[in-house]
Length: 287
Length: 125
Image (cartoon, rainbow over all chains, first blue to last red; front, side, top):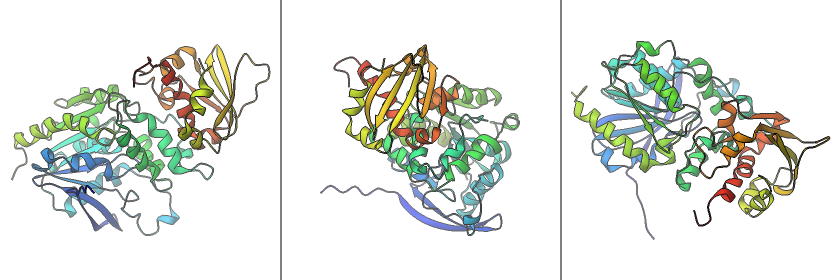
C-alpha cells in the first residue's frame, strides 16, 4: 500500500460579521508571505489543492484557502432556511477583509478566481493599501447574463448535475481527466441555489466598470491571469481591465479555461510561480 | 454530419447511462440542414435528416452549419468549443421545453460532442 499524506491542514474558524455568526472552514500549508485564495462561484477551496501541495510555493508562502459561507465545509448562518442566498459585492469584499483580520494576516497577497477575480478588482479599488499584491484569475469587470440562472435552482432539475453541465465547457481542452472531473465534482456538490446566488454578484451586483478606473497598481501590484478557453471571462474581457489599469500585468494562459488552478494545476503553476517570485522579490509590504 | 451519431453514442456505455432518464426527440438545426434525434433511455434509436413536414420534438438547438462545423472540429477554437459558449456568442439558440435539456445537460453535451471523435485522424488519441 502506498500512502500519500499531504501537508495541507484544515481548521474551522468562527467569526462575527455584519451582525451574524459564521463558521468558516479553511485549509492551509506552508510558511512565509500569506497568500489568501478565493474559489469560484458554486465551488470551494479544494480548487487550490495544487497550489497548497506545491513545495516550491509553500516554502515561501503560507497558502490559505477558505470556503465562503454556504460553500464547501463552511456553514450557512443561522436562519438561512428562510432566505434566498444572494452574494453581494459589499458582503464579499467585507468578508474577505474580515477573514484576513480574523487570522491576523499581515499584508497578505490575495488571489481569486472568477467571482474571486472580480472581488480582487474591488479590493484593488477600495483596499489597495492592505495587501502586498493582488492576483486576479479569470477576472473581468462585468458579465452580462447569457442564460436563465433559474435552472440552477429548480425542483425539476438536479442542481448538482445542471451546475456541472453549465460549467463543463469552461474547463480547457487539455485538462487531465482526473482534474477536469474533480473540478466538476465540486460543482456537483454545491448546496441548492448557491451557484445561482453567487452569480448574482458575478452578473448583477458586481458590475465594476465604473470602479476600474480607481485602481492604482502602483499602490498595490495587480496581476491578471486568464485561460484562453474561458468564454465566461474571456481573454478579451481581462485585457479590457488591464488596458484601464496602468501597471496591471496581464497573462493569457494557452489551453487553459476558467478554473486554471483546479483543472490543470501543474500547467497553472508554471504561470503562477514566476508571479509569486516577483511578488516575493519586490519586498513590498515586508515587515 | 450526424450519420454516425447513433453508433458513437450507443457504444459509450457511460454516456448512455448518463442519459438513462431521457426519452423523446430533439431537433438539431445546422441551417439549412436539420436532424431529429430520437432517444430512448439514453440510447439513440434513430437519426432522421430533414427537411421535415411536421417535426415533433421536445427541445431544439438551432445554429448555422458553419457554427456546428467549427464545434465538431477535433480541437475547436476557443468560443467554438461548447454549447454554452455558442449561446453566449449568440450563435446557438435553445428552444422548446428546456426542462429535459437542462436536466440532462451533461448528457446532451456528450452526445453533441461525440462527432468530434469521428473527426479525429485515425491513430490520434
